[in-house]
Length: 326
Image (cartoon, rainbow, N blue to C red; front, side, top):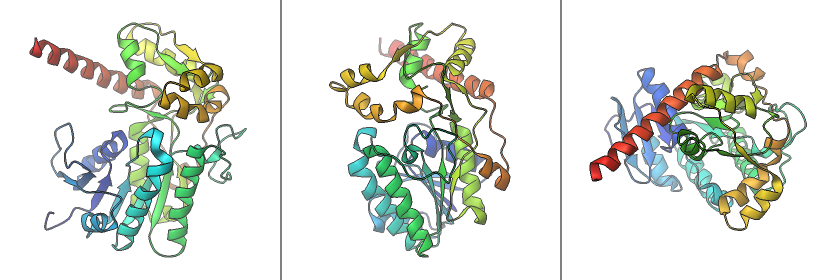
């Protein structure tokens, strides 16, 4: 471990953790990334180190966070294992950080409200999820807020709906979508194209989490992070198509199709819980965050441009690797 630990520790080196890293580096902050391997698949910026630790171990979490001011929990178990693997992760991070002076910022989603709340999603909605993923998310957030109320830890929770952007592979507009789109094939989506659905640019999610980590007023509360104006899923598809220079005509899976396909595909079986959020209006209200801290979310056109550019770069790099092996 470094003799002078950095001020910011990020658990998880997936798309959200690395996006938080980007925001902090742009601010000139020193950062420690934490994952199970002690390595990431891209060059580290100046001022960033990566260490190996098991976030389910309070002792290892305490060691990594000793002397830090803010820790960001961006790690997440595989989508098909949330119920079994998320609680030990939260327990380890909570107990470890409780033994330090660091505050915790938790990157959360909106599953706890249920897939179809029937109106704009606000922070004061009850936890109404009936599916296992939503109930798991609700229990984790309640555990963290209870620990804050008891004075054991300082925590702020930032919640975002479906996000997209560079490095974001497992998402509605992720690896599978772009693999098809860049090959001029029909991408697969679920739900209905004509329904409004809030989508968050990953960099806006990360920027909001950093803001929560730096503001005392954020502590002990849940915040919906800023997103660009809600549009329909079809409008998002059209934006991606224009940037790619080709019309996109997705194949839409309905609930019956997901049910059948879920017999053979565990991921699709899990996604079924949130199907109503893609077949009905799903609009997230971030006005409370905006009133407290301000909000300037990235316009969709700019976010789409950055996302397409990143996926094109990945496709070029992949083709060069194939040529190099030939």
